[in-house]
Amino acid sequence: MDETNVLNAIILQKLVRANMWGGKHTPLDFIKKGIPEHYKNTHRGQKILDKTLKELTNNEWIFLLSKKTGKGSDEHISLNPRKVAEIKQFLEKVTIAWMHTLDYR
Image 1 (cartoon, rainbow, N blue to C red):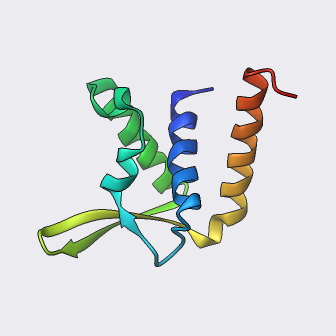
Image 2 (tube, helix red, strand yellow):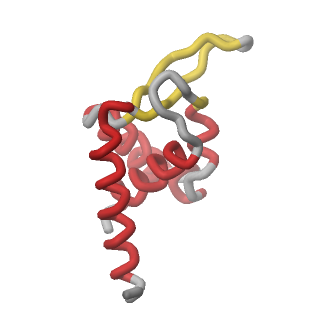
């Protein structure tokens, strides 16, 4: 699988599990905590992560919002409730592809 697809799946799965649809949002930093270290700590990994977030936003699967907090403002993220079917179909496809790479049947 492509690195962007892996990151797409990690980010989407984390948001789906936390039930972050529509008006319910979470800070982007909390999502980044669940991403493997080699994406957070290297320049190449940061570029791939930024590309992945941009791709998810352009596909309208996620919303990136700037929210005011007590310390200034933070980026917050949530899933687009109008794209539920597409998101779940993508996650099923990625899960099946991942299981085939591990030879589960």
